[in-house]
Amino acid sequence: MTYHSGSRAIQDRVGVRELADHVGRAIGRAVRPVVAAFLEQQPMLVVGAASRGGGVWASLLTGRPGFVRAAGPHRISVVGGLRAGDPLTAALATSGTPVGVLALDPRTRRRIRLGGRVLPTPRGFEVEADEVFGNCPKYLQKREAYELVADRTAGVSRHSTELTPAQREFVGSADTFFLATVHRQGADAGHRGGNPGFVRVEGPTELSWRDYSGNSMFRSLGNLECDPRAGLLLLDWTSGAVLQLTGTARTEFAPDGERTVRFTLTEAVETPAAGLLRWTAPAYSPANP
Image (cartoon, rainbow, N blue to C red; front, side):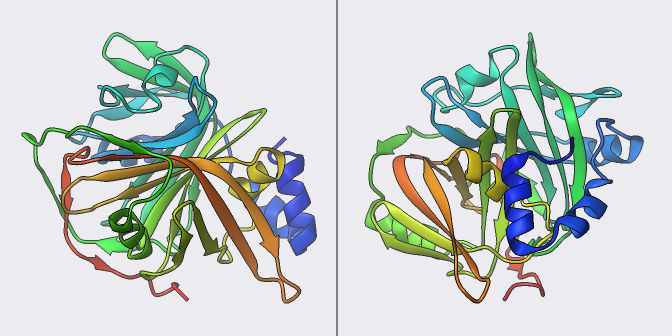
């Protein structure tokens, strides 16, 4: 079954079930050659899952192209792993953990999503895929090139239950974040983008963003319909700093059909220089409202 009850509920409410069924035909289990070739070119990967503590998080992996590759017709392999202390380190070292994977290339504005189960390996981990599919380039900012800063070392992480003034400014100026959600059948890692300011900071523990029209799958919102736990990942595309947020989210539907997602923070983890990449400045997507 391509969609679970949560996604179906949102699709029916918005009136896009037929379109969702058409788009859903692209979802399969195979890591096709074109997907394998795309993965081997990528220097970054985003993973989403529930931690052993129960919070849902999105985490960043970076490395030289080739650190992620196909390992079979339904499996990918990742060499290396998350930094020590990342909220998902233990989960990705546990066989069978449901995980969502997003490979996104800002240079080409292409992205591949994969959902499956973790299989730890001596060199990192593998993911046995339950589903693999691509997404359109909507709301994806284009970044022309990156530099791999191989000698960059992650700093000490700062944990808090509220966003600091500097973190609130950082979130409010973001043009991209990554969203992890879960349901009883698995996990998902997705992307959200827009012009700076598309994420509204409404307090030290409250964020919101408009849910722009997309492919009508409603994977993230469908998951939140069943399980409100969510994780956000924001990157400093120059310094490699990451801000990871976990909490709960809910979707509000306005009479005119506009959808707003409201996120309440439980914990924030900020880590300087956690990523090895330094990207060029963005060209904003022409689809951004």
